[in-house]
Structures are given as structure tokens and as C-alpha cells.
Image 1 (tube, one colour):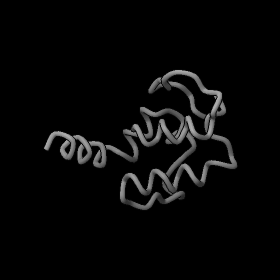
Image 2 (cartoon, helix red, strand yellow):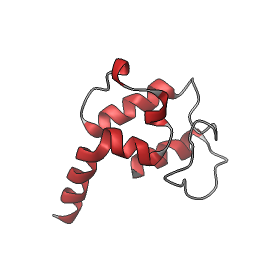
Image 3 (cartoon, one colour):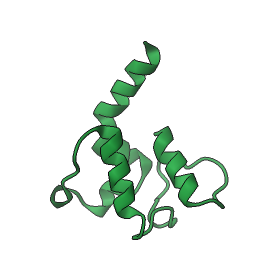
Length: 85
């Protein structure tokens, strides 16, 4: 999740503090339509898999918690294992 939050801070330089896992990234305008495809590319890179846009909804990208659940559960476990070892 660190790469995602770093990317969000990079795209929103005025953003202060941490981003809560349940904060609505779209309502808070942390991800806009111009950055959305770049965000998907980032998720694909982190998860090492392709996101089929026919199989997702906007709600799958709405919060960090949902992003982790929907796209990074396997990657998050792999990252945790790599950090521990």
C-alpha cells in the first residue's frame, strides 16, 4: 500500500497526513479521471496482473481497503513475506 499512498501524495502535493483506508479516494478527488488509467497501471504493476475493466466497477477503486481486497490480496501477502524474509 505504500507505493499507492506515495503515488496519491505525488498526485496531490497539498495533501497532508495519512490517507485512511476507508477514505473515499474519488469523492475526496485524490484520483481524478485524468489519473485513473495511470492508477490502474500502478495497480497492475504492483499486483503483477492485468485488471480487466469489464470485470470491475468504480467502487473497486473507491477506498484503499477495497483496492487492497480486490487487487492486492495476493501481492500484499507476497510483499509481507518478502519483508519478513
